[in-house]
Amino acid sequence: MGLSDNTSSTFDRRRSRFTPLGAVVAAAAAVLFIYLVQRAGVRQVTAGIRSLGSGFVLVLAISSVRHVVRSIAWVLCLEPPDRLRFRDALRARLMGDAIGNVLPFANFIVSEPAKPALIRDRVPLIAGFSSIVIENVFYSISVAVFVACGMVAVLLTFSEAKAFRVVSLITLAVIVLVVACGFILVRKQIRFSRALALLPQKHFKPKWLASAYALEDRVYGFYRRNSARFFPILLLEGCFHLAGVVEIYVTLLFISPGRPPTIFNAFILESVNRLITMVFKFVPLRLGVDEAGTGKVSQILQFSEPAGVTLAIIRKARDLCWALVGVALLIHRQIALRKSLRASQSVEGAMTSASIPNL
Image (cartoon, rainbow, N blue to C red; front, side, top):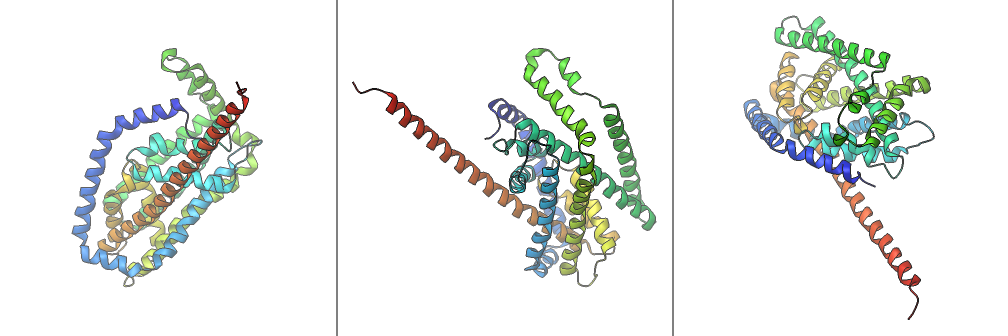
């Protein structure tokens, strides 16, 4: 099953609201991308991509680990008696991410909510939605720790890169503030549904309020009821970041033979990439902003700017490959749903005909 009619219409209204702004963001990002590639040198960037060659298959294989571990983490975030198969979680994740990577602002209004909607035929919507929220909480914790470690490493290592240090200090301050707010939120178990209850009933349906209460109960009570899963889930989220570091290290081995990378270089670049992804999540494929950030940090790490821009482009190609897989799964799912609908209509028609007596 897909989204309910009400939910789908809500998403459609929000999407239409963001369409003009999304078009402007996408156009600006494309212009920035073209400018950065030209500044880095089209020939140098093309040569770097060629030097990767069949190594792109290895990059894809490493990146697949990230989808696998977060899908397993999602499965662990679902509480009994509901159960989610790994393959269903992986398919829903790929389909949801395909929407988020391609469409502007889709991560905020469609991508994450779509994932539990895509498994409604496996688990109830409220269970799927609460589990994806819980998984995202664990993921956010891991991102905060990973990026904070990267920024601390920058402060301890790059004393001459003043702008880089300032960004690192600001990032650390924001992380501390967000983590503190999150801790208070969980400690006090603040209920956002109370604010919903204050709204006039014409703006929401009573069942939405009940669903909000149920969602908060599931999220806040997860650790109390499933404390043994806390460490395994965090470990899986940590593997997500480790795979990112390995992916960058392997890519740089191919595209920058004159300046062999170190694990530390890859760690810094991946922490910066996580930061760019979180800040510019609304930009499709982080077009332009990823090239700008990665190119500048690559220079600080004594790689060439073309190497950094090439690295960002290869990451985009990897994301596009997984987005194509997600789109293919969405198309296959739509075809299967239509076949199932036609089959059920045929059965209903046959039963109706059989029940009519001969005159």
